[in-house]
Length: 143
Image 1 (cartoon, one colour):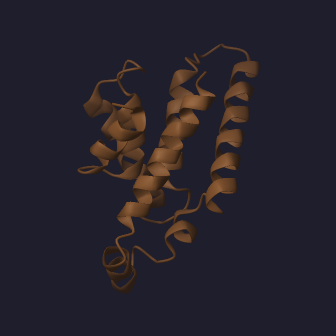
Image 2 (tube, helix red, strand yellow; image 1 turned 90 degrees about the vertical axis):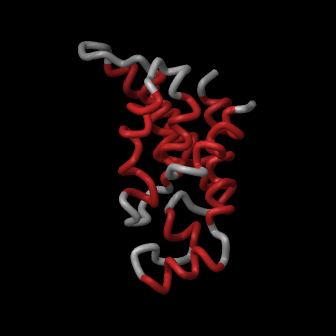
Image 3 (tube, one colour; image 1 turned 60 degrees about the vertical axis):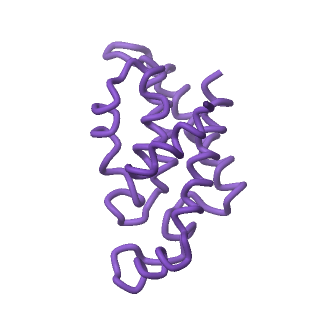
């Protein structure tokens, strides 16, 4: 099963950020429960505030964890991660028009009306697409 398929499966019971990080947990030496706990607050654009897409946030967590950065490492190692983050978010934005959850979904998840719109329009399916794209981009940027 591909990372994207694994992430979509995880998304059945978790949020978008958890799904992306969870798909890579084993590769990163993370216990699945710890990975899901780490990413839980990033779903819905950070606590449903609909800022940065949770799938994108999950991908950023994967990039950071894959860097093996340790205290005392050179600034170059941080800059290398920043570059990958900018490129991944840039490519995501180019393909989807935004990396902001609110703009991607077109509704306010914190309002009753917005949540109803999300459910009625099956926008969780769109989130699966964002998760798949983030996993596909990670495959590119982790090489």
